[in-house]
Amino acid sequence: MSKPIKVCVTGAAGQIAYSLLPHICLGRTFGPDQRIILHLLDIERAQPALEGVKMELQDCGFDLLVDVLVTADTNAAFSGIDVCVMLGAFPRGPGMERKDLLQKNCNIFKVQGRLLNEVASKNVKVVVVGNPANTNSWVAQQCAPNIPAENFTALTRLDANRAQSQIAMRMRVPASAVTGATIWGNHSSTQYPDVSFAKVKVGGVDKDVMEAVGDTPWLHGEFIKTVQLRGAAIIKARKLSSAMSAAKAISDHLHDWIVGSGGRVVSMGVPSDGSYGVEKGLIYSFPVVTQGGSYKIVQGIKVNSFSKALMDATEKELVQERDMTRALLFKDADAIARAKL
Image 1 (cartoon, rainbow, N blue to C red):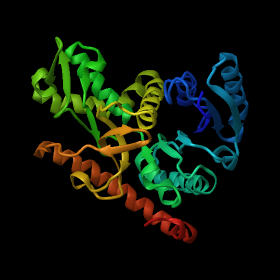
Image 2: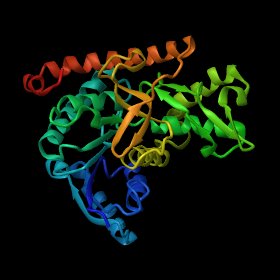
Image 3: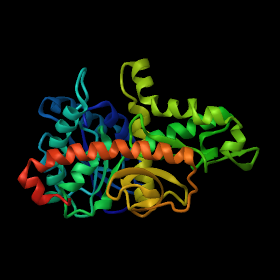
Image 4: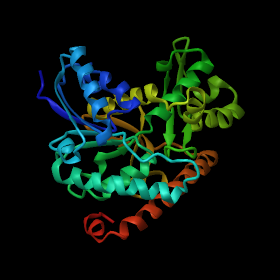
């Protein structure tokens, strides 16, 4: 058995964490032999619920689960961790302005970024799920100069899984028959679900999705809108967020990042290196291939005018979010000293 890794989950008393923890403890996330020490973080009033989660984890008898820490102390939760799943964020309330939402979350992720920098493993892998995920990830990254910038990511795998499943349902094939469905940009309603270079296996033969579906108006219209607005549709239907599918996507994201995607193209929100003209440093979703804790942005994809317009639109939103958040960070002299701006 391997040496245990410490995995922190913030917002751990919530629905997403409740669905995620079995994936981690069953070996679906980090591999069938990877032992786990869980650090579960949530606010003080959530501690009784977290104690109940801990009891359930114990009662499941997971062979890979070595120990569970339940705490409201962020310093203790982040101490020595190898992976951080950041679910906790300030939710947008009725009538809340976007700037107010960014400010609330800027304050949260600034503090958490600093603590990661101080007490976590210097190679900690971070995936931010709490929205606005891309920009929250950027804030934490800016406040953690001792951790490699590429170790801060945002979850867009949920959107990619949604895109993959929409094509699979349209073609009446298993989801695994669809490869290369990609999300560009922000985890928001401006994201661009792209299947222009995706493949689908039909009758044992790989075909271009655009050709196999044979309905460009649907692919450029309803398909994109369905993926972009799927989260809102689920909330409307069940009056709760998409916890089960989000948990599956987090597990997929971490599995492929740490264990490897086996050559498959997957989607991750990662710091831009300037590929495809996207401003360097933005946390932007790209098609990547992954192996052993690293990822590479897929190069050489032909981007037509339709795709370019949508990629630019979601980049514009991310630049606006980043600039508004950077202005908030600049108000704090200590954050400025720490930030990699």
